[in-house]
Amino acid sequence: MSSGACDISLVVSSRNRAYGLDSCLKAIGRAARAAGPAAVELVFVDNGSTDDTSAVVAAWASSAPLPVRLLHEARPGLAVARNTGIAAARGGLIAFTDDDCEPEPGYFQALSQAFAADEGPVLRGGRVELGDARDLPVTIKPDIEPATLDRTLHPGGFIHGCNMAFPRALIEAIGPFDERFGAGAPFRSGEDTDFTHRAFKAGFPVVYCPDIVVRHFHGRRLPEDIRKLQSGYAFGNGALYAKYLFDRRSNMRGMLRWDMRMAARELWTGQTMSAEMGLTYRGTMRDSLSGMMSYWLNRPAAGR
Image (cartoon, rainbow, N blue to C red; front, side, top):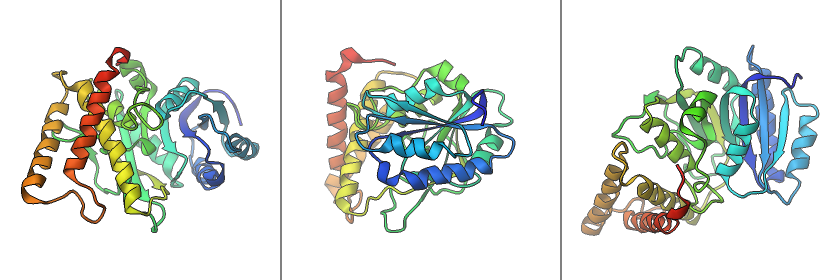
């Protein structure tokens, strides 16, 4: 296929997932075949893999139904890898999914339709369904009603980084992902939350669009997996609270107050976040405070 400009660039980042990439790549291929008139490409970023990840992608790319750009980024971190993908992408619309996700066949068509009538930059996220019924129902968003982010809502989880998209003009307006956040980075998580919050704070619409669908095969099946996941999310949230604590345009202080109230109520009433999973508001608050402290200790490196 042509290697020229395209309409949609799908960016996927991966590290040491050679064993599980086949289903993700095949799903992207099915969606590309059903893309209609939209010209699409895959930008795949190998983020320092030591297994056969790149070889798997290269072999699949030789007969793929869309152009594939295979990049290598040695610096660790999901946000770093995503920024590398953005820099190489040729599409006017840049979309993201993860290496443990499978886009639905109508994925590219839904993206094209969602952004077709926009007069300015919009950040959109789509539905994230559970891919394997054996996995616990976390890191998904199965909501079927459209929604728009407002100041009463926490940006975390409003849209998921494994199913988000925006026009190139949004990056030009607010800058790339903050590379201190996200998996593999000092603040462990929250690169998508930070990006969402910056877009919202700058006045751009942030919209949840349930017609854009991926399925998430995350593999977490034990309560201890969820506790570890929640700890990382809370740590990243804490770093975000510290980053925006004194920003008058941000609603993060209100979100921090809510977390503190829930921890205090739990201490008084004994009502936990999830007894089944062993999650507590107090534990979440402790992790958030650790994230805040980490941010302040590393503040000389502060960026956006």
